[in-house]
Image 1 (cartoon, rainbow over the protein chains, first blue to last red):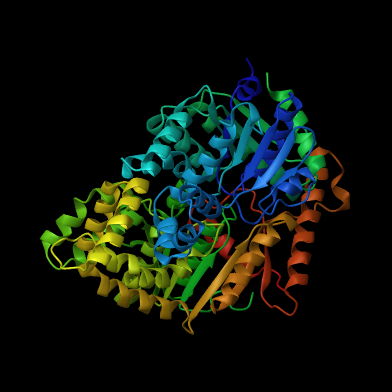
Image 2: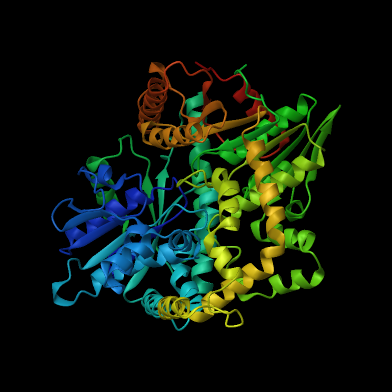
Length: 291
Length: 348
């Protein structure tokens, strides 16, 4: 079975990687490919400065679910809003709910409680997918925040469940942690560049997933590969630059492949601006290299 | 030479993830040392290649390590590790070893101190305070965490001060469920309800762990507050400059503008803006194979990015483009060459 076929069996997919490694583009590409297989796919973006809509050529979400093609929709989601909605649901009297969400102590708790925001986001996706027959999407792909250490997000529900044992929050976090650890329903796709720091972080993340969750990424994608230089090119400074960049890409990709035996797909650096045309071209290429 | 590249006694290097901030900070620090200044570069999570280039290893997590000395100037490097700084802080500032032990053995501290949001930023600030107070350096170059969300560390001093003074902490130090204190009946009923609600929602153990942590920590609060205040003043001082590193191309411009707006809002002094990893134009004679066509596109894209940034910052001096290196610096020689390139970069 190919990597994309296995990916299509998941309900919840978290796309993560170092900042600038092409997470948002990969989210858009995977969204298109999965929607192309007849699934109803929702792409969740966490960064308040929206960019997912650009990759798909639609208008920004501003918090709403926005259609982005057949079977495909995007939503920009702010964790604080999700948590406030949860409080309103748990505290039925609007006056008290407002008192709680407006209090300084609550805001500090939301800001400071480790893993709370991440848990709220993943919990939102989980609830959509558990919606039974009336559920709005078959698959949710999360464009995870660009944190220094991307594993924080995935470890968050477990951490919170442990900290908040016995409370409703802890119970919800524990249920979510169990769901995330279920490799048949949830998966992680990693976006990286074939450069030293992104590869290093990818390897660390793979190791952390193995130790913390006992899982493996469904897919690793190396974005932005420079092309193979033509044989016998004149040794101009530009040719040297291109050749050096390609050598660096190959060396780092080899380092990644030596430590990661799972699916690893490469995407080239294309002479195109971010937008639906680029997403379509890359989606075609990714499907092509996936065997 | 680009104006004011090395202006300032404290240069804070900011920018989004993956723009080469850490490498440029190291090159800048090397340039400063070569000009005869006692210089420290404080960096967070540098690549192995850069650690090799500087010749430092894990020991730099505890104390600055000498990288090079030349005439009156020298370069030291320190690596930032949030948890270790936190631990050391507690050892140094706890009133007695027993208080330190209480904090170290607290479950909340063990599980979460390292991952608590904003901790890394706050610890960068504490470390900055330590080295600044030592007076050993004429110039400190501070590399910052690659956060895209916000310049968290700028708010870290204020946030720490707010937290120390906050209601939540007061509650924790004088909790409403403390039965030893006489309370009137109405208060008891409200307090009992609040306790039951929070117990039901987040679990009593979590609350107790946090409260115990805050209580153990309370003796250190005054020190935190005064150091946080000093760092806040330092970050806004005359001799402090924020150097912004941006990625190339129009897609990265919103990121750069975000940082610039934030710095302006918070009243910090902006130094040069470096647009890094700009692709060179191969020129018309280079042919048109796949690679050259790609490079032509990338050069054009990066120029469009620069033009956009300049049009959004009319009248702003000191926006410089730093070209993409064939290979990143691997030793002091190539790091020094990168500094020369930064210093001679064309600015507008």
